[in-house]
Amino acid sequence: MRGPRPTLEREIAFWRAGGGVVAGVDEAGRGPLAGPVVAAAVVFPPHCKFIRGLRDSKLLPPAKRSRLALVVRARALAIGVGAASVREIDRLNIRRASILAMERALARLALTPDLVLVDGLPCPELGRAHEAIVDGDAYCHSIAAASVIAKTVRDRLMRLLATRHPSYAWASNKGYATPDHLAALAAFGFTPHHRKSFAPVVQLELIASPASIPS
Image (tube, rainbow, N blue to C red; front, side):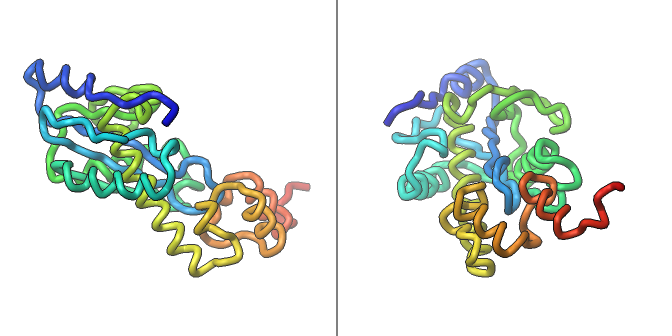
């Protein structure tokens, strides 16, 4: 499989220095037009072994991602999952909603982490000390594990929502702006699960509510 392989380098350095609990955090669902954003926090035992085949969840086929999620759940000391709703995304913006989902995931851990490793850029709003790693899901074992959990949980949620709104093909596109999803939006309009702050959903809302357009 192409792409970098995550390592335990950052976690091992912390454990060898006498550190304690390390939590990797990542989110799934920043880009879709519909559905919540979901975050996961994963804590492994100190000096754990690398999970063979673990990668950034975006690089994994769905079946392998699901298998790896089971392995992560079996080997982790603690897992926390949090989400931010479509309403919160529209009210706060996707970045702040993603951080809110991360906060909720960390709050649901059974252990208090001494080090939090976060994918991407620093998040001052997170409200706790953390280390941000750009492309962390590609390079850091704990973050990659969190990305797999977050992605599998969100995909399952989107499959459940697809049973209520089958026209939008969310079971396959997971809410992303695929041609079939965009065609359904054009034909049927948006649902309560669509992010009204995201184009092209915002354009449909303006068309549906012409009175909201400034004169």
